[in-house]
Length: 168
Length: 168
Length: 168
Image 1 (tube, chains in turn purple, green, orange):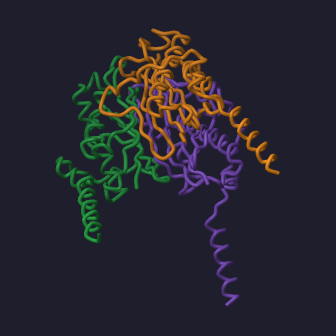
Image 2 (cartoon, rainbow over the protein chains, first blue to last red; image 1 turned 180 degrees about the vertical axis):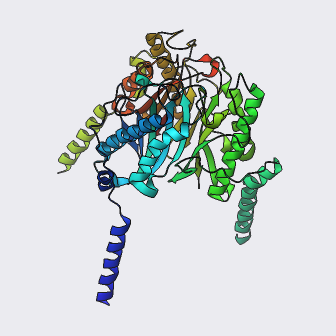
Image 3 (tube, chains in turn green, red, yellow; image 1 turned 90 degrees about the vertical axis):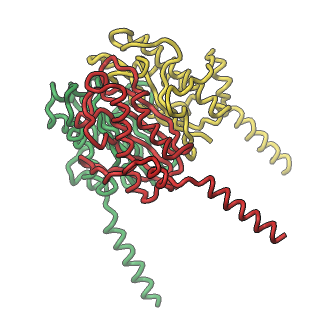
């Protein structure tokens, strides 16, 4: 009887280990290098926790993705800008949580594309952000999302994204 | 004494039945036909639940409302585009919850109108969305809202709306 | 022993009094006059509470700040428009809560600037809003924020802001 209990506990532990992906390790496997989290450019903070929700401020790309998609940038370059924005967001998330394994779910993403008036492929651009979240967090990375085209962004960023994350 | 208790219970039951509107029936009464919920057009999901909140992704109109309000569409046509967006959102909501009576409150709506630079009647357009929510859910359908004009939307949709719903 | 307990309770009370800033008094000290909260301009409500979160609808400036920042308004005028929007929001918040001391945290702000295509100083404009929140609520006023440029706003407002507040 005692042995049976030990076996059950052992199996539960193994099962848990299999189910539990290490998100920090995943980042490394994907070759993603987090940066020093960007500083707020004005009188606000990068993230606020309330209950189990973490609200993350609007983030832009880490490096020089500026200009309007559809004129200054192609869709592919816009995708890369969105991916770079995801890396910046993950850097903030890591700094806030210390441990990315505290992420229970990426809940909501608002993706804003600085674009021309006739540009209609905002979803393809913001995929650069979403694809990275899903690559890192798997099922937990799948989020509700809006993608829209905006007229102008701070620093002429090509993309800005804000996000809500459920944490433990 | 026992009779009194029975009467009280009876009255509570009747009161509850009166207070309780069947939202699925309400939809039918309003002649609103839900559609097969639209598929996400990219790497995201239509809705994510966290706690008692359901975050719904950005939705556009079910059918051909494209172009910019103030140029390609009148305010009235914009209103119809927003109403169509509400039907699309309700279709997703129904698919997620199975039973619309689980809705406790429509909490928050962000209504985005694809419009011209000098268009200032975004509230009148997004009313097409809000009016339907209130028609279906009554007091529980009344939500906090922002209505804004955006430069461009996916598929050249005239309207895009995202929503937060409190559920049981 | 009894005396020691009395002293501890006394110290806790004093400590609490020091820690507790009266936000209504703070408003008065800052010389900010709240207005009658604006009425919703369409079929929605100004605020919805769910759990400990209060979702506030999009607000514009109290008085005549219209037109596009970068053309009709300077950055400084945009800042004043955002500050005026904060006063309008605080008026709604006060009407909803009766007592501003129920505010536990300003969680999230989405600041939208009606601007020209080449305008990139949205953060400096929305600081007019954020600075006032921090002036009133101190550390509790520090929020996650996105600042973006939009193409058009209701009534040609120069600024529109929506907000989420954690309350007791």
